[in-house]
Length: 329
Image (cartoon, one colour):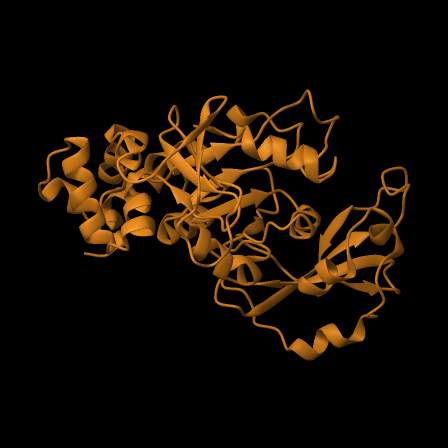
């Protein structure tokens, strides 16, 4: 059985009911720090002289802050005992007391389509563009973003350039298959509101946003860490990259639409929503559907952030505190 063949509610129930810390203590020694328990990460991908693997018993989840591994009891068994997903589910079901029957293997297609029916929208077939179109823009780096602390490496990762004719900072848009489908531009004019200039524009017809900005760059790290962090804009992804977080994408709006939800459910990773401080978590469309299928965490702390600030805008220390304080919806 592959992960896609299991009912997400069945997987969620197992992860919630199994005593992760109790089982982990049978094989590892832990040090209690506040509400969390730390131990040395068993991964051979990094040195772990100072314990960096943490279990939060209230959330019943683990996270290694060195290699990024994390999740519930099923991921724990896969990570520490190298079990296949199917065998990890079977063992975790026994540990949790959840009955193993065919209910665990429902087709997700029926469940997903039923859940998304109320918010369906029409998909749009994007035109695939010639990559040479992008060569007309200057490869210079925008000074204002450098002054904000965004590194040249981060901007290079997202192919940032400058449209001198339109006075905009631009970056290419790719669909979930890696096809070049659009160019997005951010105005460089400080008084854009006063002059009625759009802050962001798409250079070609958009239609449904059935992609995430930065998906191709982040996908290997998302798979490795079993977690995807959703920001509103691509600039937040660049700042997070400079902080060492490579599993981030931009939603490009305040809501998560049907096509994006399908991508996330197919991916199967934990979701961390890190929208700007002025976005009320209760107002995010599509969130209720997403929570039915995946572990969804929220970063929202208006005390640490100013008005309309992204969680990465106050520097690495504030970002990491916010990330540590994320809560399960």
